[in-house]
Length: 172
Image (cartoon, rainbow, N blue to C red):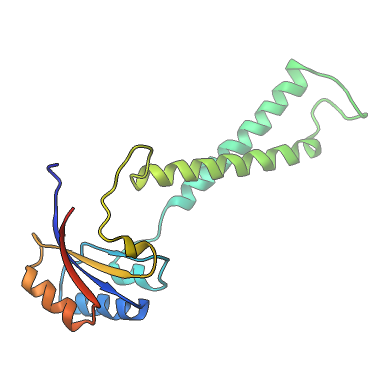
């Protein structure tokens, strides 16, 4: 366990208190290790300097791959592998392909984005991520500071002044 970090964190009861604390930490030039919330908080990403996710680009590529797979697969099946005329349709009938093309586009996009999300965030099978506090998945909001980047006394005084309901130290 060479990646152990000593952290100090504060728990907040309300997302508005959390947003005010992050703004105050930015103005005080404190290096925030991470912020944990039980649900997405509007306006938090710009305060933390996070850029927009590029997951939608991956979703488009996966969707395009699904579209091409369906279109080329059905073209090959209905013209080369099993050329049967049924219902008076020609061998290559684009309107008949549309429902399957749509379904495979959505399927490839959904599965691809899910797998990409899990890989990028380190949430694959068998991965055990440290939990700072179980309440941050339920009803508490948390700002965590790495003690190697911010003095513990400075971080603790900041958390007290910003209205943290609880302050704790932990090694993760």
